[in-house]
Image (cartoon, rainbow, N blue to C red; front, side, top):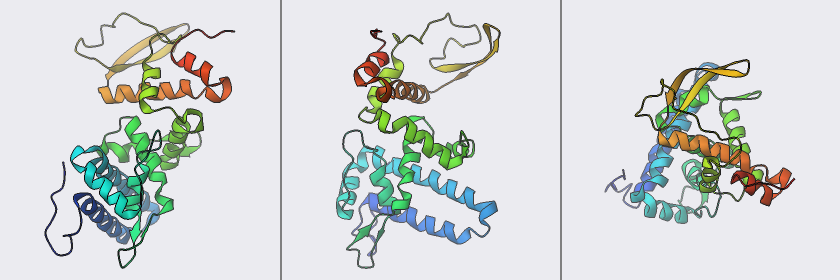
Length: 257
């Protein structure tokens, strides 16, 4: 949904996207004043800020009604829309966490907040709903890292130098390729409902066999997020094997020995 412009003197010159930014920044400042015991409350406050920032960012950049307003807000702040395969979430995080001077003539991005763009890209590509961000952060583990550091690391690995130049669409196409050697087809187990289009099977290994204990339904977005992650893993072989060979692997084509 878009936000209707207010007509008060204070907000008359602001477009709907700028009003969203102003409202978010006001509530973020309020959060800082309530952070009395950082060890107990601090992380939860930060995680809730991340969740709210992601919700507002999605409203700004994914709502067609706000596209023109978003572009205008970026231009006013001296920021540019991302090009090619650049992280589309970076400009909006600069907008949300940057500050204007007292004369509203100079805008200064907060470089320390740019890592939010990594979080947001991870949430988008992994199909995390905006209202489940805090739970996702709380459960994030990657090696010795936890919480937001784990999410940032996973995002950088999935979208770093090894897969630079490949769009999310290319990663999805690679991840969904049924000709790849590690993809196989089986008859539908009885425990999978006939109406289920996407899902995962939960199993335990028993020697050379597996025992499937249940299935979990996935939304199309969540399924495609997993496919993109698989595609990114295939395409990340660029550095080790060379781009041509990596692309053949991703497309399931034969590679000369």
